[in-house]
Image (cartoon, rainbow, N blue to C red; front, side, top):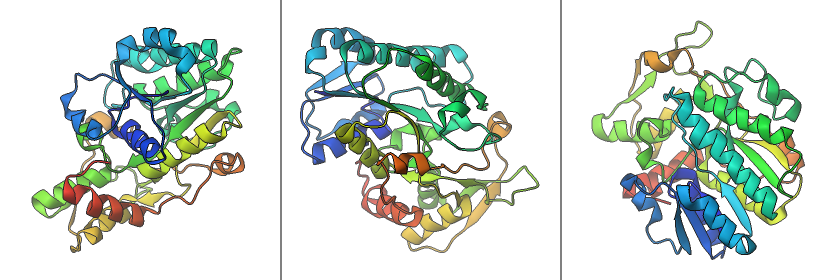
Length: 321
């Protein structure tokens, strides 16, 4: 059996679809199933078990002999949440328990970290283990992810194979339920359909023009492909960046959505909300050398191509991946 925490969510459900497409069976989905908004992500998926996240550890104790791999993708991902206790429970301590179960029972593990650990990027975007302790995340979410990375690296007892993935800006089918935390691609498409216009955050820094904030956007299908390769290969454990290695502007992203819809761009700039203004990342770009040298690299989908596939094959058809 293969377990996927957060399996009803965005990246987790796309990973499950990838596993099914590749012929894997006996898939176990772990999540908080009280959120009915995510039910579409579970449709038409042949799953062996659905386990509530609160019951996961007792289930592992009973079934560990049959578990081949665990992907720990589930987390509280709201960057506007400032209740540290929430992140301590759902991100830090829950992840420690997953790690310890995998270590005790010899289960290989891939877990989700985040590019939010890099904060404003003053220490760069290298996934060198020695730099993890120097990072200064800008919000409790990023801090919870970095605290777990630091904890994992300090452990003597580890799963016999493990990797932590610092996901950069993931976009693609299956994120419809994420609300404010959905990708800019999703929000741009929705705004165009409703108003014919895209609203982007104005720059509040003199070194960036409006719309020229840059992020490393990675298509969710590529993220799932890398995770599959790690499960199949199981070599070179450690923490890795997972982006494309190429930062793109929000203007380029918005233009790509308009082109996918065969419309002329109409863009309005609005102030960045005050509750995230001071913690807003103006630039991210994954340093990808380590992932590539470890044998986990691939031909990542370009932003224009990814937007085209996402918009025309999914969003325009109300289809989830």
